[in-house]
Each structure stands twice: as structure tokens, then as C-alpha cells.
Image (cartoon, rainbow, N blue to C red; front, side, top):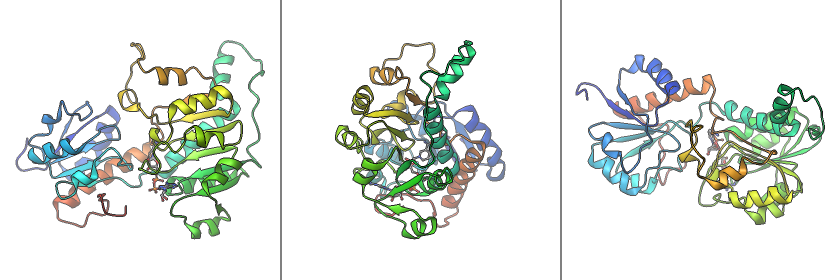
Amino acid sequence: MNENKINVAFFDAKPYDIESFNFINIKYNFNIKYFKYHLTHDNIILARGYDVIVVFVNDTINAEMIGQLKEYGIRLIALRSSGFNNIDLRAALANIKVVRVPAYSPYAIAEHTVALMLSLNRKIHRAYYRTRDANFALNGLLGFDMNGKTAGIIGTGRIGKVLAKILSGFGMKVLLNDIFPDDKFAAGSGLEYVPLDTIYRESDIISLNCPLTKETGYMIDSRAISSMKRGVMLINTGRGKLIRTQDLIGGLKSGQIGSAGLDVYEEESQYFFEDLSDRILADDVLARLLTFNNVIITSHQGFFTREALHNIAETTLENIYDFFSGKKLENEVCFNCQN
Ligand code: NAI
């Protein structure tokens, strides 16, 4: 610990995080200690004596942990993500401030969403292995023109809007859904907001770009799936728990779901971001998902571009600086603020 500096405990640190944060930290000169582990009940003592903790999407902080962090002297939780469903904000209220990085690159996630769509549609993941094995047959690789098809986007915030523009550029009919429709955006882009059941009924491709909340948790269950177009492509780059995975598996087995691209998974915290290739996969649901040749799973890599990493480091360290300089916290999240 360095008494003359702001001491930062950084959890779930990967080599690429350390590189981007050290680069930006030249400007701030915070004392950052990088821990490669997730923050959990068992290792929370590591935070003792620090001023700030920096955490990511799979560091879950419940009410009890908030109490402990407060006791250890933590004054700020700086999320280096846009989503904040992993923090008990009600418990943080009046105890510890929470800040996040609301927008580091909506392009990164929107473009990854499209990468999943194109790969699934044109079976690039299968073609790659075939040609390496000198199998140049096309049987089973038939795709469809995206031009003229209908895409439904659920959640039209920063990412959903970029996605809508890209898909419009493909000549797709794009349907929007949001609990807070942005009519100006819709009018400006010539698109329309429709109810959820219209998205389900009419879309050839559905993309989930809303946050995980009480309302959106398990929104894609067997009931929702049965109201979708048969053979629909479902893409989730939002949060794993938007989908009840067992119901998705049922939909895939019956053919109701034609293909699925998942950058997030409801039990991802034990697996994603780690190399577990020398172990046996213990999660039977994830293992089953991985057996489908019409499913592509990426391990929460939507955000993973050079530009996004740079912006994440810059905004996170600026958030910390603003807090300790008593400036207004532009990126605060709290239980009763609207951000
Ligand atoms: P945003 O906050 O700009 O937009 C979210 C939109 O979802 C808002 O317009 C909101 O009104 C809408 N929404 C909320 N509840 C809804 C509901 N019940 N039904 C329909 N729409 C609803 O967020 P942004 O930056 O576009 O990110 C969206 C989500 O993407 C994040 O919450 C996060 O979970 C996920 N994400 C995933 C990443 C990845 O690497 N895969 C990286 C960054 C974000």
C-alpha cells in the first residue's frame, strides 16, 4: 500500500487488462495491485486497505460483500464494464459509490453480433474445419440472403442502435423493441418500434441487446421460443440470464430455433475468460450446447477490441480520478438513479 497514492485493487486481471491500464495509468499514477482472481467471499480480504476496487462482469458483489468492503475502507467500486447486474446496488446505496463505463465501443459488440450472424448463416465455423480436412463439399452449408429478411432487435441503446444501422445496410427489415423507445432514432433511420410479440412472430433473426433486469431475466423461455418463427436465429450478446438455457436447448432440439449465437451464458462466470482446455467440462448444459453444429459460443468477447480496451481503461481511471477529486460522477450507477 502507498499512503501518498490512491490504492486500487484490480480483480480478474488478464494480461491485456494490465497492459491497457498500465498505459493509461501513466497519466494518473495510481498504485494498482492486479489480482488475477475473481473477487469472491473467500478472497475479499485482499481488498483490505485499498481505496477502490476495480471489477469486471463476473465479479459478483452481494450485500454481505458490500458490508465487508465498506469495513475494509473501500470507498468506490469501479466497474470496467457497462453492465452492472453483478452488483447489489441497493446494498451499495449510502455505503459505497459505484461507477461504470457506459460506452466504450458499441461498435465492438454490434460488430461481434453481426459476426455471429454471418458465421451461423453461412456456416463459416463448419466450412473452416471442412476445407482444412480437404473436404470441399457444400452439403449442409446452405445459407440465406440476409437482404430482405427481418431482424428484431430487443434493446435499442448504444449497441442496439449501431446494430440496427449495420443490418439496415444489409437491406434487412429491422424491427425495434425497447421499454423506452427512441422515437427520434426510429424516425431518423426509417425504422419502427413494435411490441415484443411482433418481434418474435416476424423476425428471421432476433438479437438481445438489453440489460439483465428483473423484467428481462429469462425473457427467452419456452413460451417465448414457441411464439417465434420456426428456424429463427437467436443471438445473445447481452447477458446469459436473458435466456433460460434449458428451454433454448429444447428449441434447438425441436428445430424451432434454427441456430444460436451466444457470447454470454447464464453460468459463464466459472468458465468464460479462462483456459480450461486440460480439464473435463463439468457443466452438462454448456456441454450439451457445445454439441450443436448450429450453435456458436464465444466467451464474452463482444467487447474485445483494441479500441474498447483503451476506452475501458481510460474511463475507469478517469472515474476514479473524478471521485477522489470530488468532481461530479458522470458514470455513477445507483439503485435509484436512472442510468
Ligand atoms: P444501453 O443502456 O445503452 O441500452 C440498453 C437498452 O435496453 C436501453 O435502451 C433500455 O431502455 C433497453 N431495455 C431495458 N430493459 C428492456 C426491456 N425489458 N425490453 C426492451 N429493452 C429494454 O446499453 P448498451 O451499451 O447498448 O448495452 C446493452 C447490454 O449489452 C448491456 O446491458 C450489457 O448487458 C451487454 N453488453 C455486452 C457486452 C459483451 O461483451 N458481450 C459488452 C457490453 C455490454
